[in-house]
Image 1 (cartoon, rainbow, N blue to C red):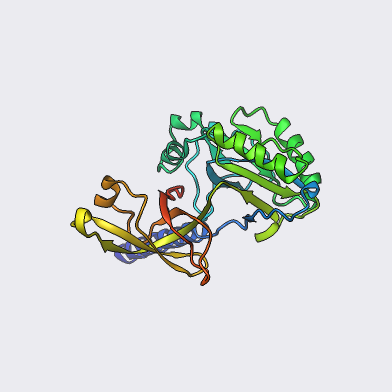
Image 2 (cartoon, rainbow, N blue to C red):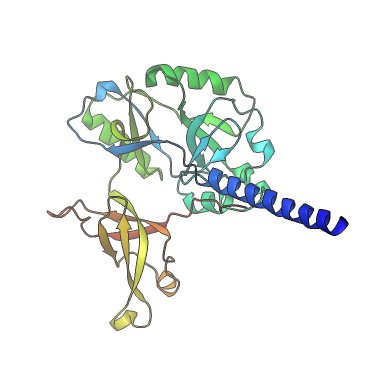
Amino acid sequence: MKPVMFRFSIALTICLTVVSLLATAVVAEDKPALLLAEKYHQDIDLDAYWVSEKLDGVRAFWNGGQLISRGGNTFAAPSWFTADFPSTPLDGELWVGRGQFEETTSIVSRHMPHDGWRQVRYMVFDLPEDPGTFDVRLRNLHAAVAASPNEFLAVIPQYRIAGHKALLEKLDTVVANGGEGLMLHRGDSRYHAGRRMDLLKLKRFDDAEGIVIAHNPGKGRLAGLMGSVTVRTEQGIIVRVGSGFSDDERKNPPPIGSAITFKHQGFTASGKPRFPVFWRIRSDEPPRNR
């Protein structure tokens, strides 16, 4: 009986391990239903919107117990970083400072908790599960954060701006000081997943994201290096991005399957981004199934 019981014990252990791994994989693939931004258009009613700086950070969803990435992966934040966070879900950005996107991603994308997180702040801007309008949610968000003694948690300042000219002047000030742009949030809107005009972004340039699906060889001075990458945007548009790369990046191009962000100047008549220029690899996802 002992060999049989031993084999049964081994089999049971294996089954439980597999179940545990599968459960972990499911959690990792459970992407949070986030509110996403459309582009700002001058004909909107600015009186209806709150304005805030668009932080150059890493989007993170606090589910009441863990910080989750856009892709559904758990950030390895130290316990002291999230201590006394509200139990209610929060939406925000992990942020080190203006112009520090690469430093931020380097810190928050590691496998294990570490002291580098002391440079990071979780800058929140919404309460996803609050049923009220953004006007109401903003008041409740300030109250929730004020009740927490955590020094790493703060609310992104929101303010009103009267008129398109004043909005552009504010944009210029933010950009001149190293910021990325502005966000506009409609005060009477409810939180919902996906893109609508309730949340808008305003920058001095257009940008888009795409998944790298091919490396294309360079010619002339770039012979032997990567000349361009072919990417597929979230809308399914195929774009070739060839400018904006350093020689080091051409020697070690963004891997196939990785996500990159590129700048462009509007769209062609067929809907393709015009004059795409590589900006950066979107390396804000922590590793899966740690």
